Image 1: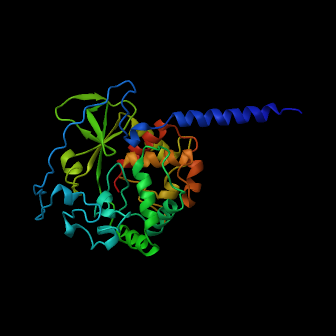
Image 2: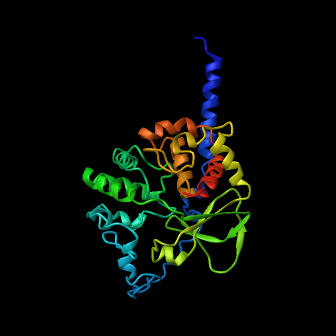
Image 3: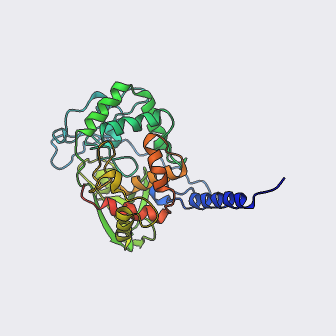
Length: 328
């Protein structure tokens, strides 16, 4: 039997390229704390502190909540009821046992945090399609340790079509407004990873940024502990990444398709296609990489496959640095 050396070489090139892309995972975008060395001795368990039952407050709110109430999966704190329309019950309270309130992770205003998605202002049809993709197991994470993606799949499967539609219409009724400040820098405050977020440490110690984006709350305690829906984020990006990203986004840079063809000239969305201006760079890069690796599938993903096929992790970083700094 004759062997077609050209075909073999082509297959080898595809496999080599795929392996290189898989090894090129933008780990920073997933914000997962590294596992301790296998040789490390187990850390001694400190006694659990007594529960904090004190009343918490936020500026501009007349309400008060305990930490337990703030993080209640079936009725989390709503600090500023006047900031948003009346929430559907599925958004405000979820549905026991598996459907947590949407407002817990995505906030009542739909702004969300880097470990999840900002859902305010998404087209209703797009929102519904993504929920259906979760339900059909078409949308997963390429990083198995990104456990909240699995939680989202469980939530989507536990919701009825009417509940999904109600959530989509609620979040779609609110515009996406500035939430993230992009800062080009070569060094960043030292951080710790907690709950899929980078939280700045006390003190003024810094470390090199390298080829990462560190997206961190303006107010670490206000975000992590109090879940303040008015407190946004800073995205520290490498020096020069915004300009590089602009070339890729606006012209394709010889590697991809210009984003404005589908997402609109201002990147604020076009019809059923979502806006990408001013949104989380961590989230955007995870989605680009997950689509490239085949973990995220679905109707709209098919259109994105050729767009992301040739992108490296650095390309994705640069694209996110540019889009996140655009005015939504």
